[in-house]
Structure formats: structure tokens, C-alpha cells
Length: 147
Image 1: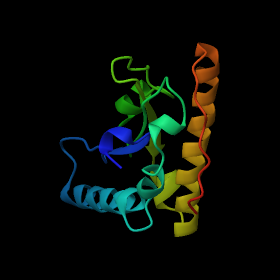
Image 2: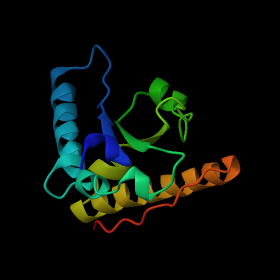
Image 3: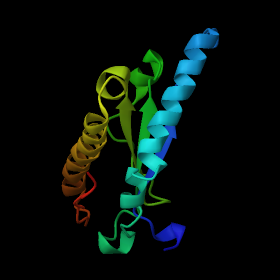
Image 4: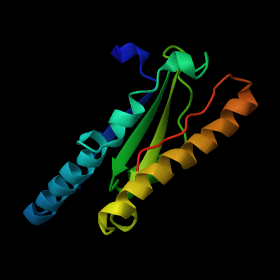
């Protein structure tokens, strides 16, 4: 499948740090970033499941839905994150932020981490379904069989 045919994609941002963070905090953040990225792009990562979905199979109004995972965002970032971003008409795409923190991911055992990602994606897709319905778009939502 070509990159342009993919319907669901992932982006990981962070972890975010203040410029004056000490070396230990920077190292811990680096490790958390690597760990989380493994759940997205690793051998059992969600991106392999999401990449199977082709945009032509799910409707005509959206070409790509991009899940944007923000690892430990700074308070100012968190304050400015919408539940779902504005529709990008030129690209026929929409970004969906998912916040990943110590409390909802890093302090959990592996099974609960997979559950968090799966639940977060499905919850955001439900929210997107409401937006799609309001706009009168055509979009058939997906079912994930990942974990």
C-alpha cells in the first residue's frame, strides 16, 4: 500500500521539557519517549494495525486521520490542545491529539498501556463520529482488533 492510501496515521510529540531541566529529567524523558514510541511503531505497535486501513474504504470526505500523541506535554501545551483539531480542507485531513502522561500510561503495567492506547483511539473516533455527523460527511468508522 502506498503512503497516500493510508487512512489512519500516528505522530508522537515529546516528551516536552523546560529548557532548564536537569540531566536526570532529560534522560528519564528520553527513555519514556523511546518506550512509548515502541507501543506505536514497535513489533506489537498500533501503527501496523492502523496502516492496514485505506482511505477509500471509509468514505470520501476524510483522506487521513492523524492521531497525535503528546508525551508529558507542558501545561501551556496542554492548555492549548483541542479535543480534535480543525479540519484541513486542502489535505482532507484532521488531527486528533491524545495526551500521554505518567498517570495514564507510564505508571501502568504493559497490558494497561495497550488498553489505554486502544481506548484513547476508540474514544477519539467516537468524538470524531459526532463531528462527522454534524457536518454531514460520509465516514464509516473502523473497528480495531489490536490487543
